[in-house]
Image 1 (cartoon, rainbow, N blue to C red):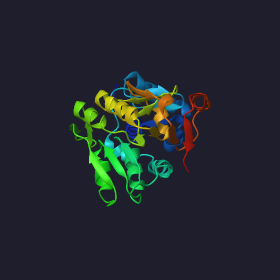
Image 2: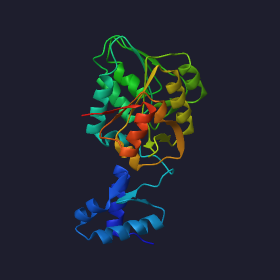
Image 3: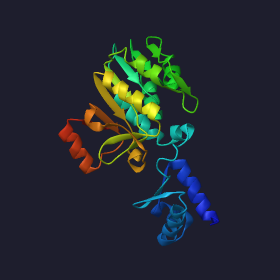
Image 4: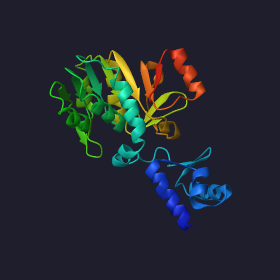
Amino acid sequence: MVLNIRQLEILELAKASGRVSVDDLAARFEVAAQTIRRDLSELADQGILDRVHGGAVMPSGVSNIGYDERRRMHEEAKAAIARACAAEIPDNSSVIINIGTTTEAVARELLNHRNLTVITNNMNVANILVANDSCEVMVAGGALRRSDGGLVGDLTIEFMAQFKPDFAVIGTSALDADGDLLDFDMAEVRVSRAIVAQARRAFLVTDLSKLERSAPMRIISMQVLDTVFVDRPLPVPLMQRCREWGTRVVVAG
């Protein structure tokens, strides 16, 4: 089926933000909500979008959003999350920081910390923290992913196994309603698991748009984390699970 102009624009909006809502699209195009629902259903029938309650998302498990696009998404939320996380990392401590745009925001918030040891498999994090002259930066070996500056593979895991840092700061590509962290790349999943296993305390930094996305590979459960830093309150059922697990939740901002 040939897409009409409105459907093409809806698709571009979904690619840019990862999700579109019926109400927002109806207001944008000045058409009835039912018209938008029909557009989304037709796009879903072709496998271009996945329908969710109140709108649609990019198909799960097909591909991740481009890294530059991800860096621009939810910038204010990521900055608030990063400030809250960095505030709980004291001077004179050690921290592993993995791949992700929100973890990079945390690195920027650590620029004024003193006497940190930072271990990372994220070239972008290393390049940010090189400006902190009191920060010792240790970069993992491994296979370089040009798409996001991440280092992954067996060499990366072996490198991480040499450390027992005070903190691990990790991100996630998607977050399931049951509290599972999800990703698209098994190599990155294995590194993230290794990072959490080595750290004395493990922090997740993520905005809650990740609840509206899906990815095919499970990293870990929030159950094994010490603290989750988010931009707005978790859904009540997930918040209740965190209480039962003893996982602390910090709502930034």
